[in-house]
Length: 116
Length: 114
Image 1 (cartoon, chains in turn orange, cyan):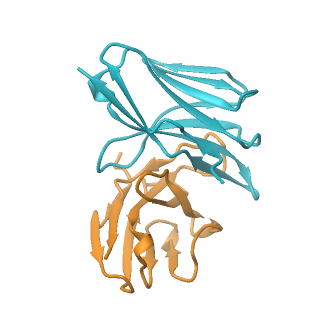
Image 2 (cartoon, helix red, strand yellow):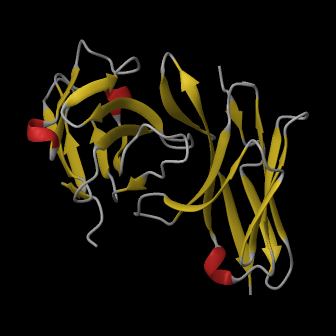
């Protein structure tokens, strides 16, 4: 089966510019996650979708970050305007249900964002 | 507040020997624990997991041990192979604010020397 797809793989922008990332989860997976991984740290959950509804966005900086999951499949994460501290790898993951504590998450390759 | 800690940022092991990666957690509500492996320019891939009702889970060369009283888990790789060289993240899962969340550690970079 195809894995989680993400694009672009790399992005370089200047501060105060806008950027968007795209994710296509594994077919049939109900739950989609966006993580931010800053260099030297573990992935930090930004937002979790169950189908097309938001389950958890408590760590999403809502003044500049937004995300949507249209029709419960693909998702986009946007940053507007970007700050230097947003430089990180943005990982998308999906799981089949997201409701069970044994639900394994499958990750995409990530998008490496550099803000200059 | 780092709820999941991997205190060793890096580890070097000779090929064929045992690799032991450690992870500590602080929240007693965590009830499921996982290890992920990450190669450069790739996303993390699931390796092995353990629930809080067990103290050991084995899958081939990989064994995870859980010590709930110490809030500590470890991943043993025996024998270690050069292809095991990667960053290993432990993650803990539990209900937080009504939903299951994964909290990841900061990772340990394992280098297996040929």
